[in-house]
Length: 201
Image 1: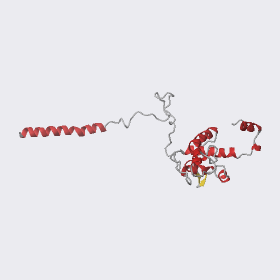
Image 2 (image 1 turned 90 degrees about the vertical axis):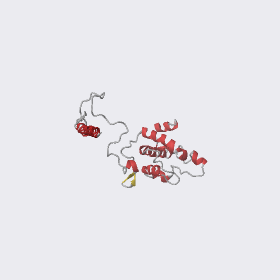
Image 3 (image 1 turned 45 degrees about the horizontal axis):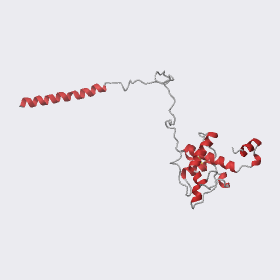
Image 4 (image 1 turned 30 degrees about the horizontal axis):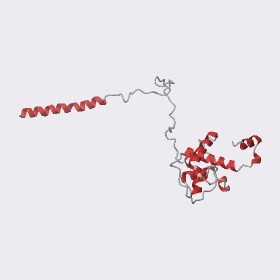
């Protein structure tokens, strides 16, 4: 009986002795250290263009490039409301068209399609919505509109969780264009521009 117990204990010890040996053998592998990888400007047989260095995927953000205090994110330059669009925002027809679509979706229900404060919510509700064409709002910096969309004002709540910063700037640019469209002296327009106005363009 004693012999069989000793034999059993010895067998267990022998089996357990293999465990540290296995760990040592695993640690000897250098696959993770010497793993196959590309170096800058290497040729690649995997990618169709033959380059190892690929452009970053769309909508990725470079490491350490996000700045929560930048004009793009705050609408302010050194604490003051921005007078111009941030450098990242290019003012063109595409931006204004996108701003119009976002304005129509989020702003027009209260402010109206032309910004006169006569949207359907204002029409049906007990509140008065200010016109975007009043003198005070036509002269404020463009960063003001970004700031109001971001933080809200009065009964208007913040849209920061609903509208990305780039879209807020697009709306602000469209609001400024909307103001110009409703407050421009017709006498200052050229004949070609007048024809476009008459044609509804």
